[in-house]
Picture 1 (cartoon, rainbow, N blue to C red):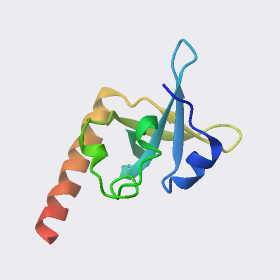
Picture 2 (tube, rainbow, N blue to C red; picture 1 turned 90 degrees about the horizontal axis):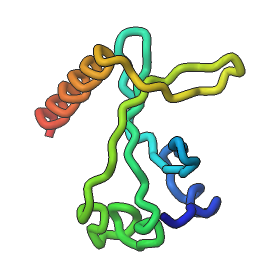
Picture 3 (cartoon, rainbow, N blue to C red; picture 1 turned 135 degrees about the vertical axis):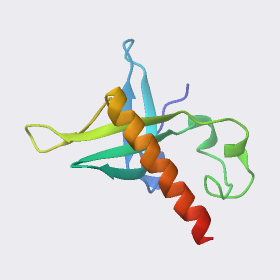
Picture 4 (cartoon, one colour; picture 1 turned 90 degrees about the vertical axis):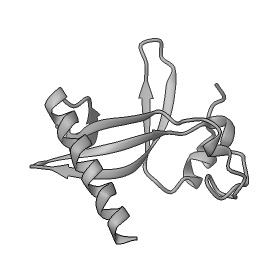
Length: 115
């Protein structure tokens, strides 16, 4: 997997979340949507395909439809604040995940009805 350059990260308008696996590999996600559920906030995180970042299409910048070729990884993460006031992304509990999934589906239904 190619490394994202700092200038490439800055071109993406949504907040960027970097996840690191057990082997130290970094994966980049954009924060697509924040869904409040109760007193907590949850982020819908969509993977950034590093190989498509240089593309000039409209879906990722310019219109060739390259994002439609492969499905993106999507994660739901609870947004917490650490002792330094920094936002951290935590795996939700099963109950939280279901509540966020249901809230997301309701949002999508409202959007469909508004169109």
